[in-house]
Length: 434
Ligand SMILES: [Zn+2]
Image 1: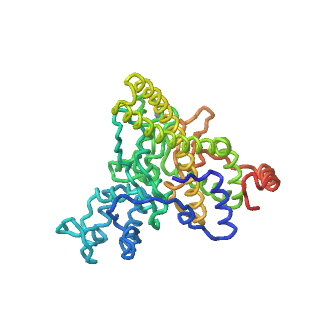
Image 2 (image 1 turned 90 degrees about the vertical axis):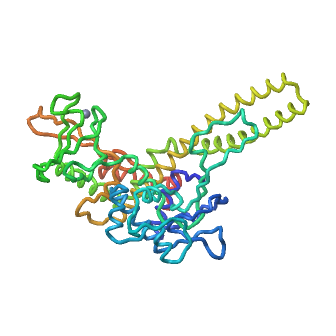
Image 3 (image 1 turned 60 degrees about the vertical axis):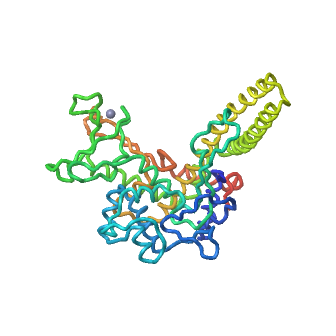
């Protein structure tokens, strides 16, 4: 997978901002490969001119986009399935039937009865981001000495194989949300923040309490380890309406700052991530590239040894010694490569997260109310500290961790002026087009 250095996206967004033209990133990555799988996911269709190529099947793609939008809005697979059924949307096999395309599934009595498994399958399919995902088949001739890789390594992701239906950052965010499954409360009411609010003392999720006897003004959160004072933690009480107000203010302030001072914001991000951006990033990339090449070479060398030994060209003694030497190198290298790969993947994730944050800020104008999609795109985690009543006032400290950014303190005007000066003096340092 081609890696995008962290600072490239600053540059890219900056350029997009000035030219008001968002580049189609998927076209610029000119990585090539071949797709192994032949089945076309719902939303695409094989190009009649070139059977290797997929085209967007617009009516089906619209359903796929709808499914992802609902998931970003915090709905689970069964809720999404019910919603589609309510709107009389045909399931994939029924849709194929209706347009006269071949398919292998039986159509149920109700052609709009979506199965939640189908939804999960769609939500987890990375190919909607435009890539091809191949599972590397491990046909190893030399069976005893197989390299152990992490699971990511078993997948080969080839970007830009077809036009994307879902932006990559949205796809990744949906995977994150799915890891953090939400449970509706007894009353069926769900808080905007469910799954995102934690206790900073014990690390547990805060429990959203919404009994039938409570009106929405009274709904509250408390630490799930509090248990009415009989548990192991303090109460960490906050009313939902109060939390909504705090989060709303934080988002508005942050959005205003980014909108007015985007170069300054990007500069701050660049400074914060400098350590892993510059020196390390390149080194890591080289480590991974060299490591992979060397691992392939070792595989070949060991095959050769095995052959030489089998045909009597090499004594068992020498064979054993050499093999164990190669094996040792192989093991160590496999660890180094997967560690470096993990760092690169994390950097890639971070840049995608930042893209999502910036895009959300750009698209939102005046916010009048918080929506699940807004929350899920912008906020990673909220921590509610325990009530401090010692000062006589009821004072709650809330920490908000934003996507890609974490906790963020909006700089003062003086600080902003200093940074603007820095940017003006060293435009190349951050590759700003200024
Ligand atoms: Zn706690």
